[in-house]
Structures are given as C-alpha cells and as structure tokens.
Image (cartoon, rainbow, N blue to C red):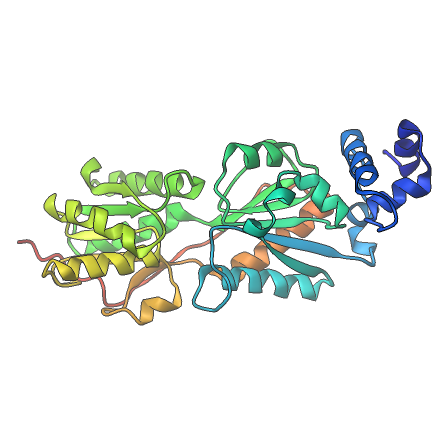
Length: 335
C-alpha cells in the first residue's frame, strides 16, 4: 500500500508538502501540487478519504452532468440527481453537482481533479462515450458510476440503468396485442451506448413475437421533439401503424408530425414514448410510455457508488421497466 512518505521520498520532498498537495492546500504552487498528484496517481495512491470512506469526516462525492437538463421537475435529470442526493444525505455524504460544459478542462484530468478536490467518487450523467472519456474510465482509480454507459474490465467503474430489453419488449407486446405488425422504432443519438442497446432490444422483441423487422422502420435521431419531422414521414410512407420512440420528447414530436399530416393518434397511428416524464399527461392524447423510475435510479447510483468506494466491485445495477398505458395507443386500424 503506497503511503504519503513513499511519494515524498520518490520526489525528494517533505511529507508535509505531499500532504498539503493531496489536500488541496492553498500555500503551495499549482505546479508543485500537480506534480505531486501525478506522482501519486502513477504510484497507485488512494487518499484516506476513499480508503476509509465510512470513517472519514470529509465525505464528498460529485455528479458530473452533460447533455441533460436538470433544473426543474419537468426535466429528465432532476429526479436522477434528487434520488442520488437523498441517498447520499441519509448516509452522511455531501454532493456537488458539476455541469461538464463549465469544467471541460477539469475533465481532461479526471483523477487529478477528483483527488485535488477530495472527492471519494462520482456519478456521471448524460455522457456520450467518446474516446477520451472511455480511455479515462478504463484506467481510473476513482470509484465512478456511469448512467446508461458501461466500461468493461475496471472494478472501480459501475453502471446503473433501466432494463431496456424488458421495456421495449413490453411495448412491442402491447402493440402486437392491439393488432399492430408494422411497428417503427425512432431512436435517440447514434453514438450512445443505450441507443444501440435499445435498437437491438427492439429487433429482438420483434423477432420473439414473429414480427418482421423492416429496416425502413428503424431510424436514429436526437433526444429532442424536432427530430421526428425527419423520420416520421418515412415511417408513414412505409406503412407503419405504430411508432415506439426512445424518449417522451421524441414521442411528443411524433404526435405533432402525425397530426400535421392529417392523421389521428391513436386512431390512425399509435405512439409509445420512453421515460414517463411529466409531459406525458399534458400531451393530447396522453402518452403511453415505458417508465424509468428516475428517483430510484439516482438512489441506486449512490448505493452502487458506496459499494465501489468500499471496494465491493459491483458491475451493474439494472432496474425493472414498466409499461404505462394511456391514450396514445389503440387497436390497429388498417387502411
């Protein structure tokens, strides 16, 4: 086990200087601080706050959030963060929320930032797994939980999410039971792990129920309503009678696009969303959707992070999905 004295000896400096650097003291230079932190990381040093997190007086974790709104209850990230904070507070952890677009430089040196600021772990929300992030999470020594992303091979990194295989299958079964066979799937961003999983889940569910997988009825867009206008017309032209969307926001755009073309939801086209956001009840018709329990996801993320901090190498925490049936789906009405 690497000690502060080992780091001091390797750099030819004092134990007190190393201790100050690792505790982010203000009376040493930034250059010296970064030199010491880099050496500590290379040597595999783990700050005492993480090695004995359950006994530490300064119990700090953080949430990095990117590509996701979270300021009010109508936004996806709000309940994720609320659930995480609720679980953290019950276990005497303080939580800082760090919008990534304001801290791009810090995230280029993830482990250095975490050690410098005495964070014992982090919950990462809304990240697309570009190569830079992937490489950092593959080798990080900081306990880290990813939402809807997975890194194999690093026991310090875990995954929390909802079972999309279960959720998508519930949606396809519901539509199949209503007589729909020409079912389209409008996904979110192409370069997100969860998008790939949802596409594969859709294909698997269709085949399981002996339904033809028409590649003309599978498209990727973005997690915004506006993306529907680029893909819904194609679905309709290829005879779709139902559309499953990868988010409620996309589904709201699909309802608007169908309506603009003089068709009715659900009489002509059934539409299903994903997430069960508050907007589902305000849409006309109200939206059938696959529920993600975001509050529980946040709580699960803190539970998983606590396990990782205490060297319990849990890989994944997957919550059950639930189909919420409302007014936007009905029996197929073939033309």
